[in-house]
Image 1 (spheres, one colour):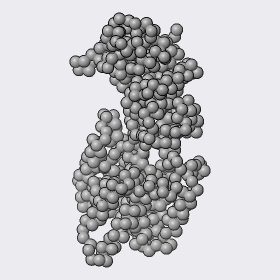
Image 2 (cartoon, one colour; image 1 turned 45 degrees about the horizontal axis):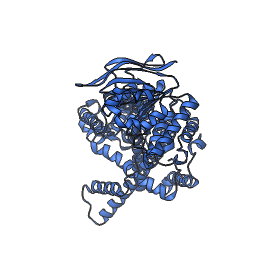
Image 3 (tube, one colour; image 1 turned 135 degrees about the vertical axis):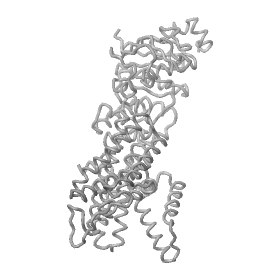
Image 4 (cartoon, rainbow over the protein chains, first blue to last red; image 1 turned 180 degrees about the vertical axis):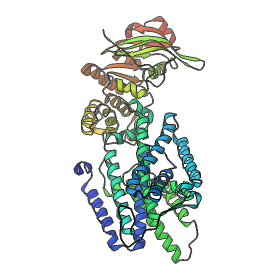
Length: 334
Length: 242
């Protein structure tokens, strides 16, 4: 299985991958709490970026409202935990099911009635906004004043209830990220992955080759929504609070897609590279600005904008394909 | 002869324009059949009806004895009809091999065996040496052959070719003609050509249907059709002598 997964990857690429994994595994022993927190954000962005990548990067369906799946997932698991004492790993099942069902509804409406391209993107924004406004009035989960989980006590790590210190959350996020990458890698090498790429490249041509494009687009949105909901569960239990104005806000959806765009849409490592670059650089810049006493609100957004501008102008395919090509890290087909 | 495709009184109306007007013809299994006609005669509309891009307003189409009119393009392909596009539509960012592989996956779910099949098809269409190139880097003659390769990889019983010779130089046309003739001879592949290039039609087709203003005005062997006064007057003119 592992041998098949690594088929076609040059030795140098494998070495870099193994090195990266070793560094990430060892990080909690050397990193302080601040660095660990940044790394959690990096992995979270890489994971959600990968989930979005399934839809846009692989299947070519532009979603600008992916925050809806984070929010639904987070609220579902948090509500089950707070109101019924259901452990998050069980709540996760419900969270994924709800988000996937929501994805299926959006997908059905759009794909059955031929809503595509920018109109599809607008539909996804509309649903995320419906959810934001709806949850603002949803008293059972705190409405607009927010929904809070009992704050973790850090004396011991309770993995089953996701209560613990940052190191535990770090490893959970690392495991989720690695799993997402492995799943995407396997999918890309299989029939479904090729069919998604065919739809992304030219849907009319894809249909002429016998591909039921409706069905495969539905698979993409349902999988992407379900994967994103898992991140939502993590978000809820890591931050211990959920506000509709935050989790469902369009800026959350936009942040989610910057990583893959900068790293390389449709590539396996683009989301991770983009997340590392964006989060790493923006934290470094924040430190620098604070040191220079130039810290102003909105500096991060301006920085994101500049990064996006540079990448779009200089490397329209993203940073990762360029780096990988220069260093010979990937095979001819990936 | 056994009939593979039977088109019976097919019509298609776009608003006020009757693009295809009660066209009927039959294609024998294992034969090469051409549809010719001037620009705007309804050839591509007829083609798109057979391929499932449009449902006809009237008439019926039977493939292997089963009604296929009104099915979607992907259902038509799964029934065993492959098509190309007049304006080529490769998957530009994917390699030539992956383009064909996606076609091959229709009937081979295992990527390894699909890839083997794709290699055979690529070799037959003389694209094997270019299989690692992105499809966007191919020249027009190569793209035309990639269209055929991709459709062929789905193992069609009937191959619909929409002006695959258009834009090719004579040497490239001859190359395509010989490839198609081999496919027909070696696999008994039935081919329906929509074509402007008479050189290719005369070399390939056993039967020719002539469309004019959406209606069939003549049908028969190529050399008989080009001498038909109605055809000469409406369409071919001096070109028929070439």
